[in-house]
Image 1 (tube, rainbow, N blue to C red):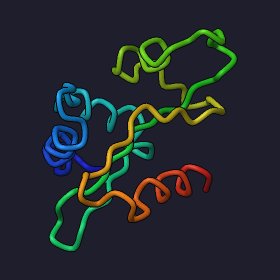
Image 2 (cartoon, helix red, strand yellow):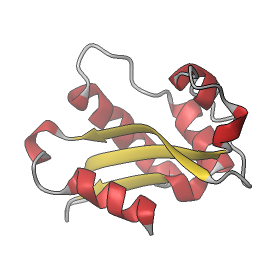
Image 3 (tube, rainbow, N blue to C red):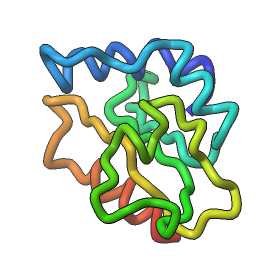
Length: 114
């Protein structure tokens, strides 16, 4: 993901998660500042974003078993990102409804393992 992709990611999230608020531009821009390697997009040949994934590194031992998304992600700010962390935490993944069942979600999980 780059800053040029952010508006497309927001548009994707509106379609992928109807009724839920999408990430804001400033949040996604901050995610790119904090951990650019963990912010991914898949686009078609025309440049339309078909999928996005946002993740951060954490040290899992810093969190209780009852930790939730808000505490792990710093309420979505990713200010909890720990560059020395050993756990890649997938905070969000979305796929264009018409592009589902085409392997985009599997791409993200394969990428995370490499």
